[in-house]
Amino acid sequence: MSLRVYNTLTRQKELFEPVTPGKVGIYLCGPTVYKPSHIGHAVGPIIFDAIKRYLSHKGYQVSWVINITDVDDKIMDEAARQGRPMSELAGEVEANYRQCLQELGVRGVDHFPRATANIDKIIALVARLVAKGAAYVADGDVYFDHAAAIGYGKLSNRTVEEQMTGTRDLAGENKRHPADFALWKSAKQGEVGWDSPWGRGRPGWHIECSAMSMSLLGETFDIHGGGMDLIFPHHENEIAQSETATGKPFAKYWLHNGLTRIKTKAASGQWQDEKMSKSLGNIRTITELLEKRTGEIIRAFVLGTQYRRPLEFSDEQLDNAAKSLETFYRLFDRLKREAGSDVYAGGQTIEKVHDKATAQEDAAFVDAILRQQLRFYESMDDDFNTATAIAALHGMAGEVNRYLDQHGSAALKGLLAAAAGNTLVATGRILGLFETSPPPPKTDQAQAARIEALIAQRNAARKGRDFAQADEIRKQLLSEGVTLEDTPKGTIWRKG
Image 1: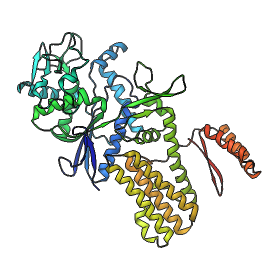
Image 2 (image 1 turned 90 degrees about the vertical axis):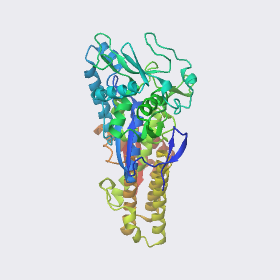
Image 3 (image 1 turned 120 degrees about the vertical axis):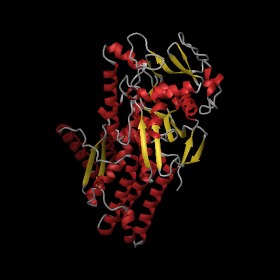
Image 4 (image 1 turned 180 degrees about the vertical axis):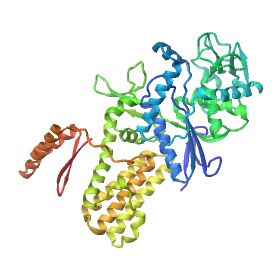
């Protein structure tokens, strides 16, 4: 199967062929560390962590970089407001960001370069552009001359005039043209800065990404990612300065994820979308979310949407992700209970035991599992469509449950069911799901006793054929986050 990816640069799906056969370099724009990271900061890392896992599964050697912007006007302003050093604030926010990524299962990042640790490389790249006549110095600031870039605007597909619509030349700047952008900013008295050939100052936003990505991945690398809001001006300017400096293509494939929208309920009762912003007061930090949800739930929520589509965020959508995962958790519990198989511990997959399926119903079951696995791979090969890949995992779970319902779990049937469960988990782990069993529910003894009492009432109602009352109790428990599963050995419950 051939992997195809949608390239923003060409606006079409293309066959994925790395610059160097067998190796893939990925650069993802990271956060400006001045405020605790919010859900929007988690989206790109979760998506690209799944992408790296899949590429690695296909046999590629992958190097993945996320930069940390730790010098910026926003960081300086916030540090001044809090009355502490910029480096202290940036370090604290970065530590929180990286801890959050760990809890979200994002563990594949190879490099987290900081802007402040790469000033020498940034200055060298700026000097290279000045020497080429593609950048000019004005009162200690250095600007890139957009006219020096061949095909400026090719990523956003906008003319310079269209790009300038609604913008203005900021007071105090000495740019020759509004489309020119800062490579180096002179430092005012008392501001953070570094010595350079043009005076004491600090890097512009765009140049740091070019310098760090090329330093770690080469002057031409495979995949550059980020949110769609970065296409212009950030990524457009990265291309302009990088390709002007090197005379080579910068990144071969540009992958942009959709933006996160907050779903809220208006006074009319209708759902509406809002842009996530501090001014609207709808920012949800990752730390806050992790206090109430597991990292796996948040991860499943993000991967439940194809990465180029807008991501609609709400507590209701997180609840849906949790319910989706419950389908798998109940199956895994069932396999442990009926087939004696702990899928989290690993074991034989369906490929290892398919030759034992000589009976027609067994062969059909094995074939159904393998078809769903193939559907998973086809989805990922189609521009990393994690949404349909997860649907394939659900299809696999459904096949296992039906097989157990129809044929039980004794002897060979149990072996095949367990192998199918292992296949499901191994396939899900390509997306970073099912790596560990979910934590036990936070239910105290009194809560557990109350739930057991309601289950006893429900069982009594069912025995007395009062199905309306039994269903009402089930709905009541479900509204409290408690799901029930009726088994031959009794009713079991789980609180999500």
